[in-house]
Image (cartoon, rainbow, N blue to C red; front, side, top):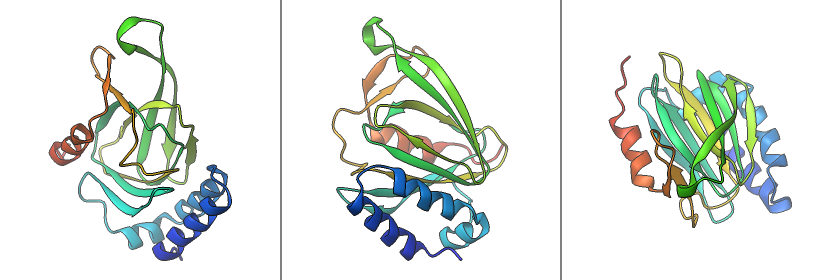
Length: 182
């Protein structure tokens, strides 16, 4: 049975022993292996949002609920992350910088994550995220640092793929205003 308090404590212990994502990945794999228990602990998926579960200088845990068909533009984290899917699906497009002006990027790969899938993202990864299905999707995102106070983050506009300073309000507005019916 999944216990949110135990999960947080286990993540804190793991990060205190090893600043990498390795121990966290195993913990997230265990958590998403029982998606029903995770949903019972976190609540039903009824609204798009990113709910902070735990936050410190060393570790941030966020429950992300993607609305049907929702897409978030390319962005970076400037820290490692571990993503685990407990409901629905999350499609990630991975991007790389080009040597063109304006910090342009180009697609470099993709990965579809389904229930029970876990993937680590390196600190230099640029990705965009889509929920490609007509129902809410849920994911646990664990970050190796203070996700809300990261200097020099970037986002890229979805149309021309030009780099700009990351603006957390852009993402929060997207979650708040995205239609929740398909």
